[in-house]
Image 1 (cartoon, rainbow, N blue to C red):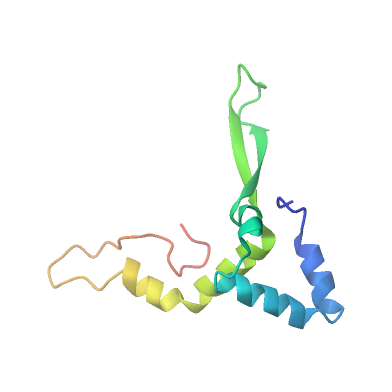
Image 2 (cartoon, one colour):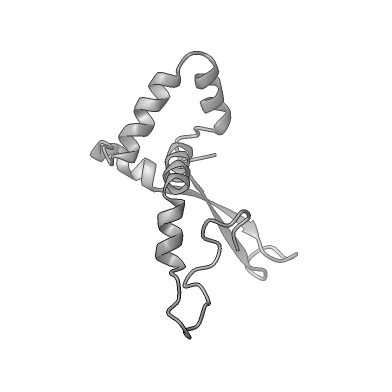
Length: 115
């Protein structure tokens, strides 16, 4: 779960029970960067969960940190990225000049499944 313990199931419940206007308003404020200063650490931060990397637990084995970000921030970012996909594509994968290398500057831009 995210730092606030808010989950996708909570969004679904709010949406299905007539809170879509409220949800839209909150997401619109986030997209415009209108997050109150005292709430910014929650929306910009993430909860870290340590998973064992190897069969052996620490200190002999490694640890893989997994970051669980705030679900509303991730939702808003996903919507903005999907709306701006074509401009991102032209920025990260510009048309090469004639005779130039045609390798894109960034992989996984506007590609289902990413890279």
